[in-house]
Image (cartoon, rainbow, N blue to C red; front, side, top):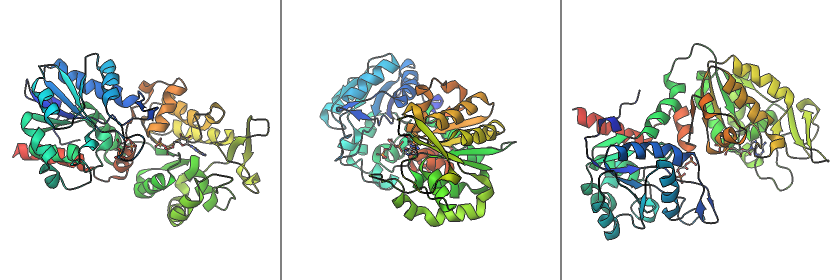
Length: 409
Ligand SMILES: Nc1ncnc2c1ncn2[C@@H]1O[C@H](COP(=O)(O)OP(=O)(O)O)[C@@H](O)[C@H]1O
Ligand SMILES: O=C(OP(=O)(O)O)[C@H](O)COP(=O)(O)O
């Protein structure tokens, strides 16, 4: 169980500085609504309802990229979810920010500008160094407490994530609590029956590392997507290569070939691969081919086939826990959603402990009319979820734990 304090432990009428992760897809310069707003709204609403003065920090994108924008639009989306006004100030810790913070009344909510617009936020450094930055030293004295709800950014050693917990009493928000508990379950919980992991998506390098690190904590891996094809290639099939303009396979193959071969060597019995694959036929419809019948890869494979789904579904139904990382196909196109939706439906219908991670994959839940309630947890984290699965520590969680320990002494 987590050893950090939570917002249940906050003293009444606090002035709280809260770190959220509202990092979102940007279209035409505007943030797009997504699960992160809905989830963080619960923490914000709870703090405001308790009459704390609530000042929010968050980041958007990375400097130099198109997704590096102001948080003005984020404040409006968040306000809709919280059901209260969320004021915005286009400043991080300058005079305008400090004036807005000082003017805040009980139960009021203010969002500060993108933390990454402030020079002290990046690059990564130790909590001690970050705590000494002007950003932290200027803002911290204005507050009674710091709350970190940004689990999905907890793998970053940035000032807003690791610096403030050294300067202020630090607590975990609701998102931080629930994400931590569900995502570490694979390492910390005992399950009576088989533990299954569904592995897919495009970031093969990430998921292959997870498979290697998890070792015998997972009884079987059900593979699809890019990683699935790379494993088929290692097993001697002429797939898992780039065709045409594609740039998904060859580089990831070169980078992971040895690891894939060693996973197959050591855990081959636990790894289930697709027996058939789907592609776009000449008429534009979905077509399928048995992997054994593929003599040469001529077109992109965009999903696992029906026989594979029929093999994976019962494996899920008899599992006690299922963790999903990555989609089995290009589910955004209805023709190639069968694999991803098939496994998600099997999980939803089964009474197992289940976690679905990764921003893209979890979008399939609402796209295909499934209910989030049928899963134990749908994570809003990508990189942090992977680290939690492999047992790698998250610096921003570690500083929260250290803060709780200091307070206990
Ligand atoms: N065979 C495939 N070829 C290309 N893209 C794929 C394939 N299988 C799955 N995908 C894509 O993988 C994406 C999810 O991958 P990834 O980013 O790794 O996962 P997540 O965002 O869930 O962490 C989906 O958007 C899906 O379209
Ligand atoms: O969206 C995020 O990470 P994710 O894509 O791994 O879920 C976090 O906000 C971290 O962002 P960053 O990867 O730019 O540091």
